[in-house]
Structures are given as C-alpha cells and as structure tokens.
Image (cartoon, rainbow, N blue to C red; front, top):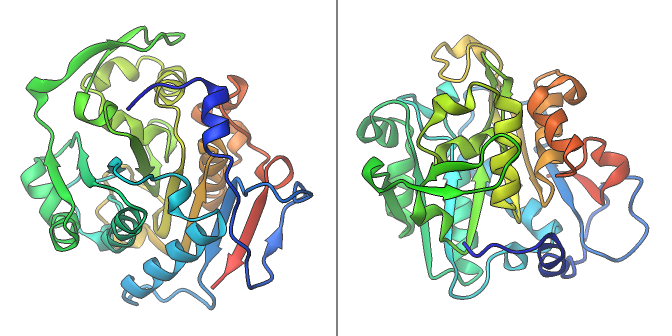
Length: 311
C-alpha cells in the first residue's frame, strides 16, 4: 500500500457520488454536490434474531456503497485489495465475535465488480486460525467468491517505521501494507479493555506485538490508524456483541440490529459504533484520542456529509 499525503488522500477520494432515488435522512452538512462522507443503512422493521442474514447483508451494503459513490470510488481496476475483518476467534456467526460472513461475501463481490485484480481476506488471529477461519464461516465465503484466504505467517512480520507518538516502529505484515487498499470491516462489539472494539482497533490484526499496544491502547491505536490512512471502512452491525467481548460466546450477549455503515472517516464510523453500544464516543479513549489528533470527526451528523437510509 503506497503511502500518500493527506492532501493526496482527500483528492483521490473526492469523486462524485451517484444520485439517489429515495429520500434518506440528511445530516446538517448536506449543502453541496460533493460526495458523501458517511452512510448508515438500516433494515426496515423490527429485527428478528433467527432471521438469515444473507439477503439483509447484501442489500444493506450495496445500498450503502451506492449512496457513498460506489465501490469504484475506492477500488480501482487492477487493485490488490486486502479486506481486514474480525476473524480472530473460534466463534460462529451467531456468536458475533467475528465479522458477518454474508457481509464479507457482498463486499468481496463489490470489490471484484469495481475491477479489483485480487481480493485477499486475512487476520492475525488470537485463536488457532485453522479453526477460527472455518467456524466463523468466513473461509467458505472467501472460497465461494474467488477471493484469496490468507493464513498469516508470523515469521513474515517485518519491523517498519510508522513515526507515531508512542509507536515509532512496529512489526507489520508486508502483504497487508503493500496492498493498494486495506478495508477495515469489523463487527460492532464490546471489549473488556477498551469498552468497544471497532474499525480502528481492528488494525491490531495487521501487527505482531499486541502486548505493546496494551500499554497505552488509545495512543497506539491512533498511531497505527494514522499510518494506515484508511480510504474507506465498513461497520458490521447486523449482529452486535453487547457484553463479554471481544470473544463472547453466550448468545444472550448478542443483539440483532440489522445495520451497516460505510465511511471515509474512520473516527466517525467508530463514533457511530459507540452509539449502537450505548456509549458516548467522547468518553471512549480510542475515539477521543483519534479525534484530538485530527484523524476524523465524532459529531458526524453535523460535521460530515451524512445520510441515513432505511431499506
């Protein structure tokens, strides 16, 4: 992944969004024809916990991606795409410790349709990857869509300079960093150490030494987020883990929400995720630290070009 200045990043993501044939909620920043920064897409009606997720996930993501300008806005012809989901835990989709596999299926297809040459999916797992990848349902989806399932080889991590406030150097996975675009796609869930774990904290899956981050998680996560310079991130809130995260296990901790959000502002996306989990994002260390560093907005409804859509 080639590193770009913030100015270059903003120019590259500044293409026009497609017109919408519906009447969504519009944030206060909707005054020009410039592209949207964030879209939240919700499924109509009351969520049913046992309802299959494939149709819901596909329709929510496709509508959200269309509204923000299409996946072509971010994925160019010939790109190598690395999709970084939560897939670290030996848990089923229903337990909501990992990203919903049906959402990943839809995202992989969108990336290929946008012209991606290769789509890779992988994570530096906590549990045994040979179990986590299968139990999560993600390995099946990746194979069915023609994407590449990557088992991270811990011997290949390479120390790189990232120039952060606290993290100056860190072992990173070269194959991820060298991709044309890395898309963070976390599930929305509780975390015992940081209260929430969302799109920014999901980048811990690209590093080797997690223990170093736990000395000062908010600053370290801010540092790696600044280095990654995300073009777009997606939040899976189809099922939400409300307690006993990040691993979970008890279905009583899972809430069906049927929502997907996409944003060019990863801080705003995490702020929205905090709200889903009934937390004030201004009180969450990882979000507050990133906002104070200028990496994005917390008040997304007023500061960004924002739409909320019901499908």
